[in-house]
Length: 227
Ligand code: NI
Image 1 (cartoon, rainbow, N blue to C red):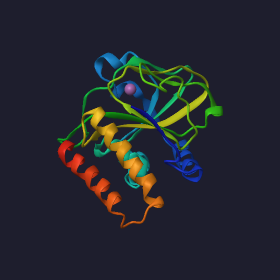
Image 2 (cartoon, helix red, strand yellow; image 1 turned 90 degrees about the vertical axis):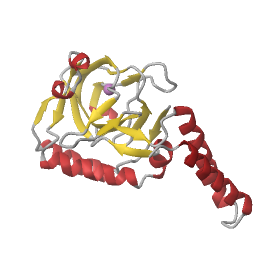
Image 3 (cartoon, rainbow, N blue to C red; image 1 turned 180 degrees about the horizontal axis):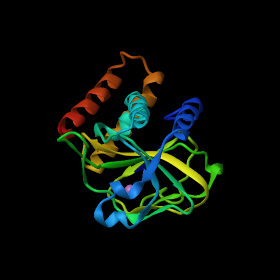
Image 4 (cartoon, rainbow, N blue to C red; image 1 turned 30 degrees about the vertical axis):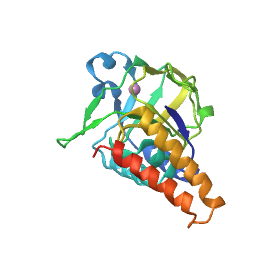
C-alpha cells in the first residue's frame, strides 16, 4: 500500500516549523540507523531529545490523530515519535529496508513498523534530487511532495532517497504499528470505511442499510484488530 495524504500540515504550520528548525543544531543521521543501513545513510537529523524536536513532534502527532484519512488508512495502534532529517550536499539514503521492531527511546516499548511515513517540509522546487523511491509498489517511483503533504507506505519494501545535489530536503519521518497487521485486511477496511464516508452525505443518517454497513465495518474490525 502506498497513499499520499495531502495537507497534514498547512503552509502556515510548515513555515513555523521551518523557522524553528533554522535555529536548530543538526547532527549526523548515521547514529540512528541499523548496522547495515548505517553505511547507506548520509543525512542530518535533529536531536530527538531537544525541546524543539519534542514540540514539533507533538504537533505532528496531534494533527495525525485528527486526520480522518490517516486514521482510516493506518488504523494506528502506536506511532513511533516522529523524527526530522535534512538531506543536502549530495546527501542520500541508499536502498535499505526499515527495521521491523523499533524501541522507543526512554521507554521499554517498541513499535512494529507496519507502515513508514515521510512528511515533506521543503517544497519540491527548493532542492534538486531527493526523490523517495519505494521498489515494487504502485506509485513508488520518484516521490517528491509539496511541503505539508505525506506519503504512507507498507514498511516491507526496499526503498531509498536519491542524492540531493542542490538545496536542502527537510522532512519528518516515522513508523506506524497498525491495529490490523495484515495488509489485505487493512486495505479492505480502508476501502469499506471510505465507501461508507462517501455514501453518508447521500443518505439519511437513519438509513437502515447505512447503519448495517457501518455495523459490518466494526464487526470486521473486531475480528481483525489486535490490541
Ligand atoms: Ni527507510
